[in-house]
Length: 180
Image 1 (cartoon, rainbow, N blue to C red):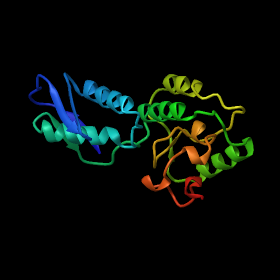
Image 2: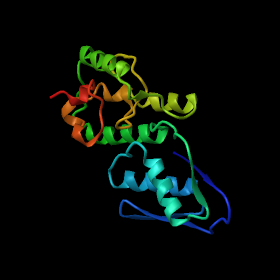
Image 3: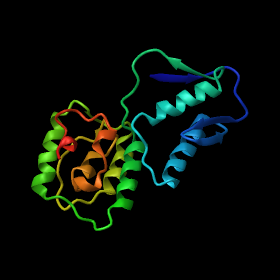
Image 4: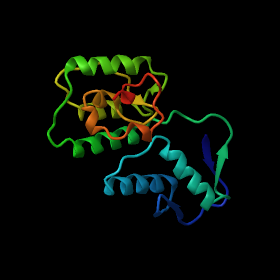
């Protein structure tokens, strides 16, 4: 789903979403406020969060924000991937990783998964995100998971027990996250 703005511009945009009341002078500010609120709460951005915020904006400001018919962009964004990296860095207390063999096996599964996708954003920003991940060995993996929005070059190294409940996301049947 794509969105557009136009018509009378409100002085301030305000929305209610996920129990939060957010205000800003523009759409970019509302998006930033939502990302910051999720981070402060210790959470992780969900795939498609941008669409949820746009929907809330359209509901609150129907004369200013409108849906554009047609398919929307992929759900993985730099903000979603960065949110996952920050979330995992806070959770990794003992810094344990899976073996290189297991990381490679997982990456191979990700390459055949229909939900693997690129991250939206410029290559320079993606390069900076990649610098936050320092695995023991470089293992090629797709950029992002379309089911959960995770940054796969990091996720393939994380022990399964630290990745949470797989039933919370629509992982494909081939996904290693569905393994016991």
